[in-house]
Image (cartoon, rainbow, N blue to C red; front, top):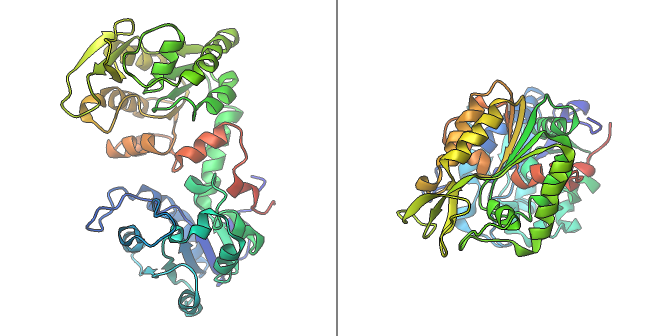
Length: 394
């Protein structure tokens, strides 16, 4: 790594502001249904505790639109972190201002507080320098451990680095090392499996990664655009018509590079993308008018499984069907189990793909599950993440 990490600076008994990504699903009763992102930050927090640092955590939660939304307070995250650490974690009722500064001034070595949802202030997403400066008053050092937010030029991610020594957290370091390793020298054969709804958000990734892979597998809603580009009817499935030429050229480029491009052979189609909707398996040339693609079919699952079983490295981003509805989740579930049982390096992109793997209890069987969906896509597109660019070089 060319960037300094938390281990490259003296944090002993210092006040350390740590940007974490505690954007976790919270029920109305305050229970957290998936604490993966909280657990992912434990190595950094525990390292700081061992150094007797005074730890000030900050995060966003969902999209409150720059105003206070009671159900989007971060207190449940503080409670869960306290349980994991077996140590009190105080949730403050604000993230800047005199009361927060007073609470932080009273911290003792090894104490932890969690600031309130940063996005209660519109200045956070606007990367307002005054807001960043107010945050910086709380600490001596800034540590970024929020990979899932590193592609955002927000005040707590980018702006604050103007006012404090700014370094990588251990989670962020691991994310960058793992994902950059995919682009470097992966064990071959190397396959990338891409699903999800939209082609446009993945084209940069596909363009950048295509010369580096041996096979590319396409599923999910985005398969409709690929199939239409090859002349197949896709019923009422959503098609990004403005991307058809790009997708067609991508297929031509794959052939010229000797990359195996695997598209669906058959599909599960439904009259509506709703629970209980009438659905059936059809070949790709028999999608009925008015029906929509809901999942990949059994022949596709078999072909994808065979391809993946021959690989030494696999990166997967995006469900292969409408995973939120159980009758349309079979392709995602079966191929997740295939990856879990591979004797290979298996890296799961964040977002809904990570949620699916965690929900199935397979996360520990994968080599690595990223905590950032959008951030991992931008990194693998070859983009420089704003939140990483501002950190101190070694």
